[in-house]
Amino acid sequence: MILSNRLSASRYLSEGKKIIDAAVLSLLPQQDAYPDVIHKAMHYSLRAGGKRLRPVLVIAAAEAVGGDRKAVLPFAVAAELIHTYTLIHDDLPALDNDDLRRGKPANHKVFGEAVAILTGDALLTQAFILMTQSAGMKPVPPARLLDAAHEMATALGSAGMIGGQVVDLESEGKPIDAETLEYIHVHKTGFLIQACIRCGGILSQATPRQLSALSRFGAHVGLAFQIVDDILDITGNEKKIGKDMGGDLTKDKATYPSLYGLEESRRKAESLVEESVACLQEFDGRADPLRDIARFFVRRTF
Image (cartoon, rainbow, N blue to C red; front, side):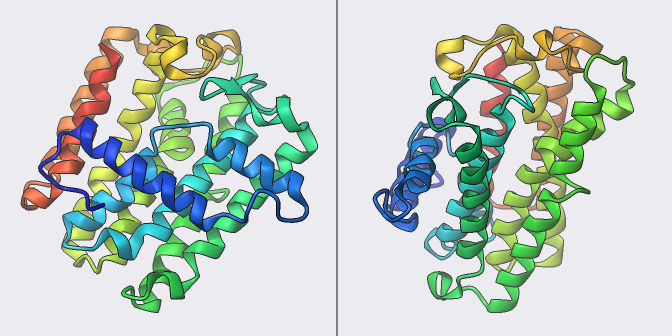
C-alpha cells in the first residue's frame, strides 16, 4: 500500500494507520515469546488503537522531501513504540493515575504496575533496536540513521520530554506563568512531534534548508497539538477520545484553557497551525499531507 499525497488528511491518516498497524505486528516480538507476560503487555497497549499520528508524521515528512515511506517505516514504527511507552508510564498511579487509555483499561490495570513499568521500558528499548537496525532501512545511509536516532534520544531526555514531565509534576496545584506552561507543553509533547518530523526529513536526506523549515513546522505544530489536547480534556467526548475526560482539572494541572480560556486557546492553536503551514511555503505538493494534518487536528476543538 502506497500513501497518496492527494488523499485528504483523514484519509491519509487512515491509510497511514493501516500501514503502521501491520508493520508494528511484524516488528514486535511474538506475544507468546518467553517471557510471554511482557510481550503480551507490549502487544496489549499497541493493539489498543490510537491514531498513529507520530509515525504518520515521520512518513509524511519523508515524502515531503522526496523520500520513500518504505525506507523509513521501521523508524516510524519506533516512534509509535516510544509514544506508547510514554502513555503507559503516564497512566501509572505515581504520575497521572488514569484507569482508561484508548477506550480500554490502562496497562497497569491489566498487568499490574511492575509489569507496566517494564513494558514501557521494553517498548522504548525496542524502539532504539528498530531505529539503529540498518538492515531494515537499507536505502538510508548509516550516518543518517545515527543522526536520526540521536535526534530522537535528545527529544526524549531530561532536556526534552522527561524534563517537561518533571516540570509538569512540580507545577500541579500551583499557579504558574505563561512561560512555564509553554515550557511544559513544548517539552512534554512538542519535542517528540517535532523529532518525528525532523527524523523523517533526516532519513530522507533533506537539505539543511528543508530541515530548518521542517523544524519550524514541527515546533509550531507540536505546541498546537498539545493546546488542542488541553481543550479536548474539557470539551471532548470520552468515548471518542478514549480516556477519562477532565483529568487535568481534577489534578489541578496548568493548561492553556485554565490560563487563557477556551476561546483564546482555540485562537492560539489556529494561529500556530497557520504559522506552521507558512513554514512549508517553499515545498511543493508532496508536503500537502503535513499541511492538511496540521489543519485537520486543530479543527477537532470545534
